[in-house]
Image (cartoon, rainbow, N blue to C red; front, side, top):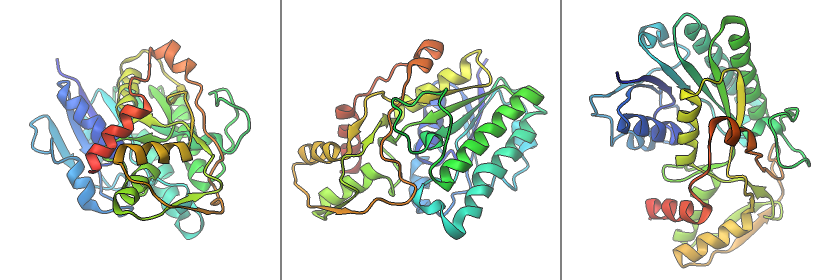
Amino acid sequence: MSKKALVTGCAGFIGSHLSEALIQSGWEVIGIDCLTNNYESKIKEANISSFLSSPDFKFIREDLMEVQLEEYLEGVDYIFHLAAQPGVRGSWGKQFDIYIRNNVLATQRLLEAAKNCRIKKLVYASSSSVYGSTNVFPMHEFHLPRPFSPYGLTKIAAENLCHLYCRNFGVPVVSLRYFTVYGPRQRPDMAISIFIKSIYAGLPITLYGDGRQMRDFTYVDDIVRANILAAQSAVEGEMFNVGSGQPIELLKVVRMLEGKIGKEVQLNFVPDQKGDVRDTYADISKIKHILGFEPEINLEEGLANQVEYMS
């Protein structure tokens, strides 16, 4: 019997890769995405173009805050909740209400619908942003979350909602804390995409701070595998880091990209941005031990794939 999944945010960077992988594995997928204007909708439409006509995919272009969820949850085995308002820097000021709406309220509405359904698992896409700015590394799941941005605050709020519904209503939830995801289809506002475009165009790259901040880059295919492992596991009410466990300085990433593209780039250094953490470094021992997850794509290979995709 084929598996049936609901994927929220199906047209986004990670959601489109997950939806595609599920369909290729014989799953039936219902994808919900309202194509928010955080970046061009034509990019999101392109993300799902390869499987939009698949008989195993049904695309619902609606807002999670308005769609009649019960209608689409009938017969669904798994929910992958990736829909969110992304980005640390945009979460300050007047836009905070958008983050509350799309990250917290939409999650609560989905959980309300899910508690009345016989789903096998709801996998929530959380973020390393929940840890905030810390000098304790690597970041482990037992560390107290202390978000350093409004975005991180909304992600831990939604994660906590998921686990409240698990404990009170038995909704089988697992939360995955993603660390700096990259790869083909990466959002145009994310660092690797910006770096590659700038190098190809011969434009300078702006680096915040001294450029020596560390990031734990995680290839999108590894994120997809972690989602599927979490969904098919017997685990409920847990959270897991999903990273490479091998942080690297941003400056070194820029140099790697220069080598792959064959062009040098000018660097402009500007002050740190509010909400940006200095370093991220995932302890992935828990997800390795419990879910059997192992990162498969190293940074050299992953960057080469993204460069090729954007060339």
